[in-house]
Image (cartoon, rainbow, N blue to C red; front, side, top):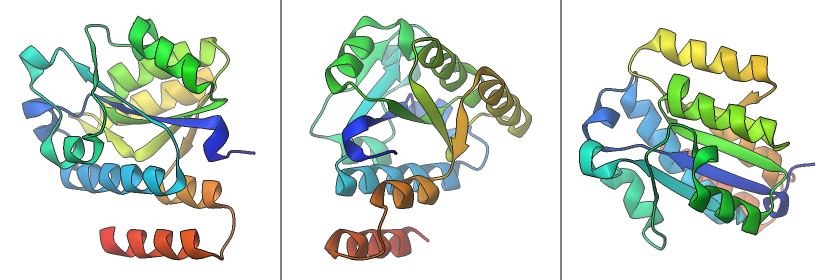
Length: 182
């Protein structure tokens, strides 16, 4: 069973002008913001990466403002699983489940999912919080991830699955949060 104690959320490379080129970028940005807020409410640890920020730019303000208490992991590889700082942070959290969001689905998200699956993590792609420049590339990335053994989820599915109950103050806050973004 997924809980905040056995899970981690990874936000991958939602940066600069590349982020502005994503298919359905407005939905992507809204869903990533909801996901980060929800993860914070549910106490799911978050790891955040940037791919060559000196070339691609920093994480977009809509996302970086929500992660201001931590610094991004800077990487020059497509797969986060090939970055030592990332793998060290993940080992410190020691999750069974890793939820992936970000860009681009068919490159960094896919290669990260593949490497995490090879290292026996259970990987779920938050499909409505990922994108590529072209819709067909997003679809190909999701298909390849499923073929490797990863699962797909959505922001709301994930948040309600971790929440687990339809009662209590945390549930009321979650409902209010979801209404704010819909």
